[in-house]
Length: 256
Image (cartoon, rainbow, N blue to C red; front, side, top):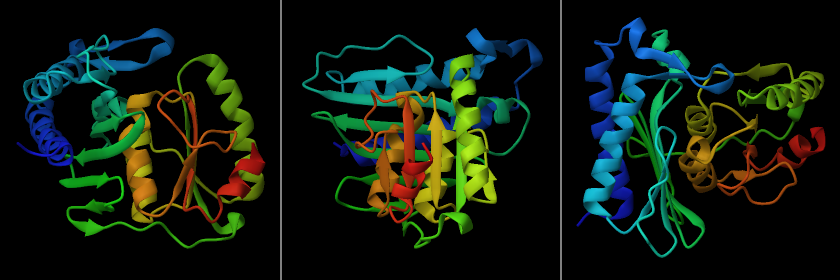
């Protein structure tokens, strides 16, 4: 039987292939909106079901937390999967090539495995606690940037009005400290890019566990740091996240 990491990688790739195949059949009638205007499609739900079926077939006693379905209690001993079938649905619907499949795994309340597959660019980001992080088998390392004013900062927020209001203050503080700020519409890829050294830090408000579980593993294994707004290690129960190369982390926390 494959390890949890190999299985996460395998399922992420399979789901990405399904997503690519189904993307050509997407119509406007397949698009709907959740509370606060969050976009969801028929394909989100179909890929979500596909991943659940794969996980249940291999790990029937594990819990599964997904964006597009009720939580599944497998009566496992603190073994949980966090699944986002399409992180970046707004981009996906508009054919902006920034979206991915994200699968994270937690054992005994510790995030241990992350797999993020970018089907457009055919890049698999994956990592395992204590064993490093990789992009298609190439080792990932965070940047060595130490000055916040020269750093590239990713940012984003959840859909509820209170998160948007809170985040507007965060953006104002980022702008006062760094001239390089980006929001690309997918938390999972932003974390993967941070682990890859494409950015130096990230601040997100109103996150969900499936948004960041896999990416948090990648950043930590690439040498970075991932916390909540208070500076404590980020866990899936936190809905605010600060991630960085570690060298500018305290400076980011000071902004908050």
